[in-house]
Every structure is written in structure tokens, then in C-alpha cells.
Amino acid sequence: MQEYEVKRGMIKDLPDRITTGFADIFETEPMVKDGHYIISYGSLSRLEIWTGEKNKTVIIDTETNKEVLSMPDDKADTLILDTNKRFRQYLDGVTGFTTKERVKRAKKAADKEE
Image 1 (cartoon, rainbow, N blue to C red):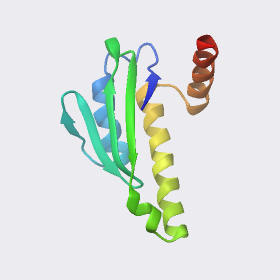
Image 2: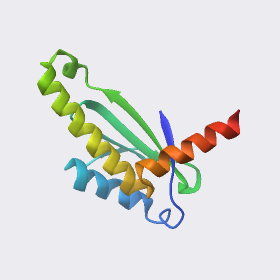
Image 3: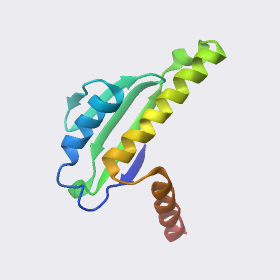
Image 4: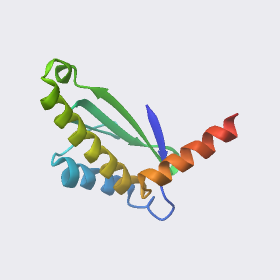
């Protein structure tokens, strides 16, 4: 499970961006259960996302699709790369931060905890 900060100014419409992102990037509609949005796509048997306190963060929990492990390497690699690319694009859209910005913020947060 991972928690990501949401850029200020993008908090207001966060639930809409969560569902729109699933439709635009993963081309699927999420199942909604108790405020959690859940899909299955590619190498992920489960991608679950929900908003944190005051919509200032999103919490994401993922589960790997075990069937991918038994696929031939070239097929598995293609599927994994596609899933990872879409997941990063999804995070960019939902959080408002690029991958590079998210890494910087995670490092700062880790340094503060030490």
C-alpha cells in the first residue's frame, strides 16, 4: 500500500479524476465499494484506490496477477511494461505530480522520518 500526496488545487475534483483516469487510461470503469475504486488490468489483478484525509492524498493498494508469472517472458514483459506505463500516467493525472516530482516528495518525507 502506498500513499501519494495530491497537488493543491486538484483536491476539489479528486473523485472525478479517479474515475475519469480509469476510463481514459485503463479503458475500464471501476467497481466502487465503500469509497474505494477497484479495477483489474494487465499485470495487476487488483488496483484499489481511495482518498486520504480531506482528499489531500490518495492511497493505492495493488496486487499482482499471478498468471503473468507463468507467461512466456516476451509476453509477460510487454504486459508488465504496458501496465506500469499506464499506472504512472494514471498517478500523474490523479495526483497532479509527475513521477519525478513524486519521487522527490517521497525522498523528502523519508528524510523527515529519520
